[in-house]
Image (cartoon, rainbow, N blue to C red):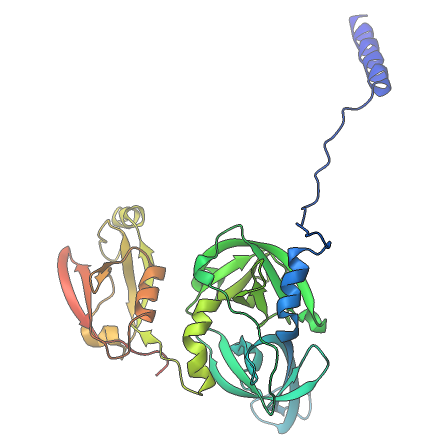
Length: 367
């Protein structure tokens, strides 16, 4: 009897609930883009300032493949066949005489480079210089004068939360603009799976897609703060740009056709913390004991490198370079990048509990 009464009460309550008005749900307002008295947003003004300086870059490269005559697959031996590969990316003009900044991977090994201006003109381009380590390249347009240029900003004053405007030609869709914010700064290339680069990226949630590579990332004033370069295949809404100040330091060298120098220590390393060291030291199967400090642990010393010549060993803990305390692997890489090939560095290490100074002379990366 009680169960029937209880069921009836629940049923009545449900009926009453259906009669009552639902509480109002606050709508989430869309992001308000500030506009001036003319109705123009800062985005449209920024794009107007730089838009004509953004270009599309079409590339062609011919490769030779050997094809198995019976199965049609690529093989070590077989009939050589030539194949034409086409690529596409973006870039922007930084000099009125036709100097263009873009990504190295956009134009690397290209046999033919064609630059398409916003007004539809198609101009022949020549690759002046490429630096794969920073993924930067300079292209020179032949026979061009008085071209529109992009204003370069200062990436050192960019802050997390600042507006970020990406301009480029994703998927061949010319003059595409996307808006977001600066998500974080100094995102190490090694942490995003680009271990062959030496870069600290600007991370943004502005949409960056294939074809955007080499295009500018702008601030709210239309100044270039970065060069769009990479997207994470396993993530949505995350893109990366090379800080423009990094490009400023080497673009002149690339424009002159000079090789950019990258000092190289020659070790495989990981960031060392007291917690990591303690965990290792408590393992009875650990190959060696590690000092419980902040620094960089040498996992392997590569042969015929500056580190091997200096006598560095696996298990060395790097704690200082030329008086600068080293706290993590990214910092050590930055210190090395800012040094010079042939410059002697005083590297302080801890080995077998003893403090040592090793004199290291960096060699050229990929030399």
